[in-house]
Image (cartoon, rainbow, N blue to C red; front, side, top):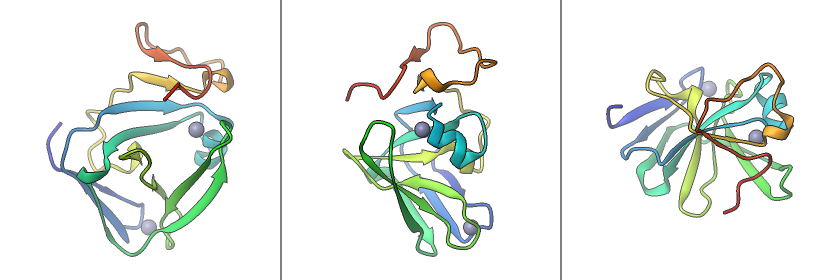
Length: 136
Ligand SMILES: [Zn+2]
Ligand SMILES: [Zn+2]
């Protein structure tokens, strides 16, 4: 993986840059992610807040209460609706990995909310698996 990593929404109105290696690549199989992505799971990377910079138009914040009970804010493009990232929490930003310009290096090692995982998905041996939200 090369640094900086760059990415953005589908229409290009929002762009971002990542200047440090992500701490984690993970999948989330919660029912909200399934609905929000209209797919089987969401793919995310955890990036230090200090290493993440958004450029372009101001994203639109959308709040939801997660299955864990906490309120998460998604930042979406006001033009094309792409879900780009969340707001910083505990010094990190969770960026939607599919918005990266280069997704070739992504290899998730943690899988969360697997209690609602679709049954045809087989998780790799040795990866971290959590039925719900992992402990902080
Ligand atoms: Zn856009
Ligand atoms: Zn989720």
